[in-house]
Image (cartoon, rainbow, N blue to C red; front, side, top):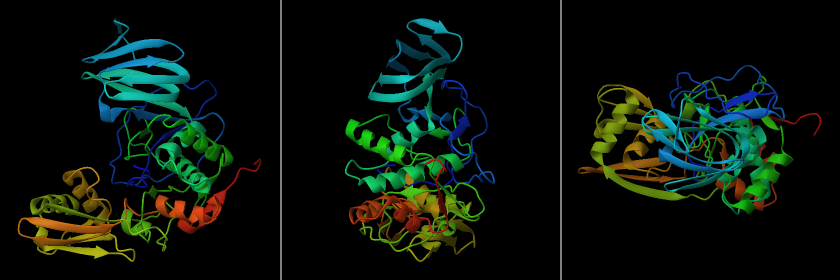
Length: 384
């Protein structure tokens, strides 16, 4: 997420304890639909120093050739379904021990402190990185925030990201998470000074998570900007609420946006959201107290759909970052539709813009999380 993009609280990053050095082992199973929430176990394991997180990286770039430098140097190429390493065919997936890896390819220059696993599929390299939990939390915190984010807001982000990954279910075949907004953005090590601050934020909150009253780790979501009021999680994602968040007024700036799109695009998105043919002119938009569209109704057929599904279907068709939030109004005119809204992202849970503003006014991470997640409690390891 661009300093916290839209994200569903149905995350999925593999978390597993290990008694040996990190080594990637891709897990193969059926992916979970991005619109569904995965219920966490009644009480997840407490994070430990050797907890690991498997993440598929670089899928957006679809690399066919990569140069890797770290504990060893090598060039890896995908030739159909065959892996070629330094010019020699590799009969099995390539597994590289944990270390600091510099990964380069066409349009790519990333650094990861992780173990790596690579295999070839249809001319594309499938790359999975295995991180120690706290290294992953630090990298996500650095990737999901702006460079000038106050330290207490970084601490709140680290706790949110840690809770999210520990509560998440599986979403991908090769690994439990990806490095995109679909799960949690992870761009590698990035800007050194910002990464150091993110590491300090993760270290200062090590093992701290948000828990629901029933004992489960909260599936804690976050977003870039709520536009002045966060959204009710059940209204956006459906019941049961696994997030611990609530709709609360916030000091986040309005962050207005507008987009003009073809009417046919609205019709197509509505048809996806309600699960059948629908027309833009027949749509009724139902909003919650924050102003977010939480339900749409096709008045001609009576079919209903979730506002979040409509928002995402619109965004997928309109192009990256044009439909910035579910808080919008829609005006039809001729063969076009004008959408005017506020905020950036789904609006549930931690608002990064609001948290940064409040942190500059002296709020601590604990106060920020109590504000955005009033239905969850902070759990601190006893030895902290």
